[in-house]
Amino acid sequence: MENLIARASFLVAVAVILAGCTTLRPVNGTPGELQRRINAGELLKAGDRVRIVTTDQKEHRFTVKTVGAGVVAGPSESIPVGQIDLLEKRQFSRGKTIALAGGIAGGAALALFIYGLAELAGAFALR
Image 1: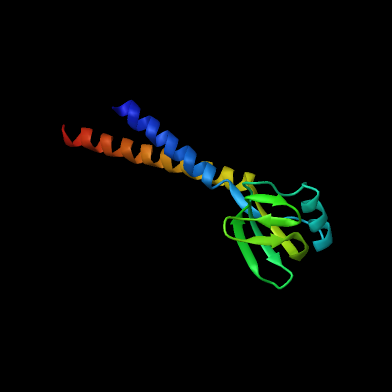
Image 2: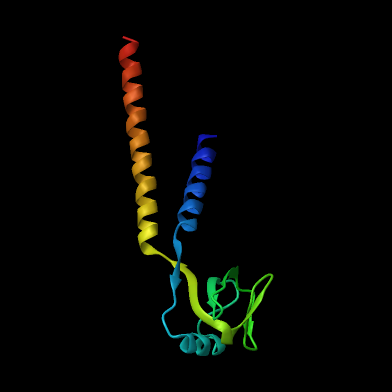
């Protein structure tokens, strides 16, 4: 039973770490460069999570379903590539990953330390 709890705790910790390892990062380039690279298939693919600002300054956040024929399509909207002014794409963040892993390890070490102190105090109370 304890082994099962330890494994479940480990899986939860891994899931939390992986969820915290990404961040939206701007893709550098002028609107024309972004549009050319999207049309060439260099920048986006299905499954990418993006924030797009169009030339009319409207913000769109979605997961890309398809890219092609001059259109970036999400689950409920499509944006013509020619209207894309700014693009941010969710990417791996090494700093966030290190901070999150360090926080989890530090918290676990602190919890073990406190548990050890409580056990020690309980042993002295029984004498």
